[in-house]
Length: 244
Length: 214
Image 1: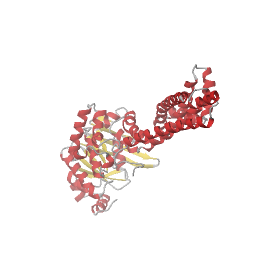
Image 2: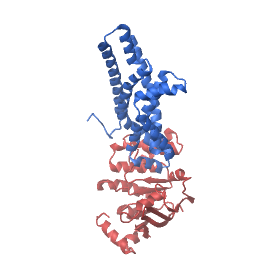
Image 3: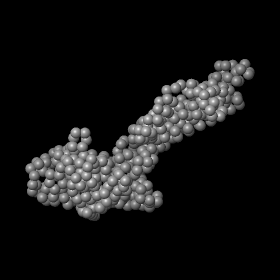
Image 4: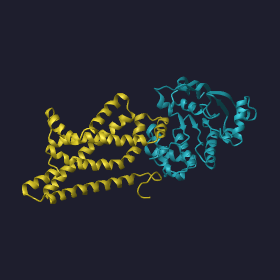
């Protein structure tokens, strides 16, 4: 088992955002977390690498529990792709990708750059290597941030609504990169309403509401024969182009 | 005139020393104020409030007549300390503002990839904050250049004091001597600002934000 999430609870003041969430992931799996806004999907994702500290519960990666002591080492195994990219604005695209291997993985400058060019090639951005983030389109920025994640050679990548900040015509290029990674066997946990990715690349859909997992299963089951009324109602809304 | 040039060189030496002290200490103070534990933050904030709250001339007198009772130092050293510590307090506010204006996502992305707080500040936030500090820092440069003339009161033989000597020794024309002195300060000020603006433009990030050349 690559990832084990056990009974995660998180409250902000009186509001309990996560009410005990547990699930597992095997290596090479892709799972998509769906559900209405304010349901705790992003909070759950942040709790997994402790960008938000859970109040209760445990996270195990490769059998090792994530704690405040091994936090930085564990985060190198669990990459995070943000909704709003968060590329380092003062670094060229290629240096954004190279900085992780250089500063955290002990690569020398040349090896780090070589790896960075490889990863940029993987996401189709070799020709923009010298550009600064502000010179890239949103879709290009998100692909660069995926390359930055890949350069850490993580066990698992967490995607927090990776296409939500993009214009509709730019989401396709990001989704196709994600599809490709999934088919190459990358383990991915994705918070997204991107039906295309969910249908094509996900092994399992996790449907959340009110801080709990309501239903989970393969896309065929969730999309064709959802067991729960809430899942059905939600899918109805997003499949008809709406936005929850 | 050679006396004035010598005075100017003393003023510039004082300026370089006090700005350097202020830069190093100001950066440390700002990091402590923005990222430090409260036990570190509070003493730093107290230091900063005190040195921003006392007139430069009073600080000079305090350091020269007060502190030299305990620690042996000349008037130049006293001036560097008094004005340098004061500059550190002002510079800490420039850097603090710059640190706070770096979007939080930058720190978050650095931490998410496994950098510790120190690495994230040094490699990600600081390079961005320093770029944004150059503009406001030109202001600090100008103020401190002019503040060096106050060191006159504790006997540092800088530009303003040299001018006074020349006038009293030669019965020279006050207006002419001080006009020359004023011009000297003005030229150094303009030259310094020009160099800093050039630096700012050189370090500006493509596609990011450009000022003044649109």
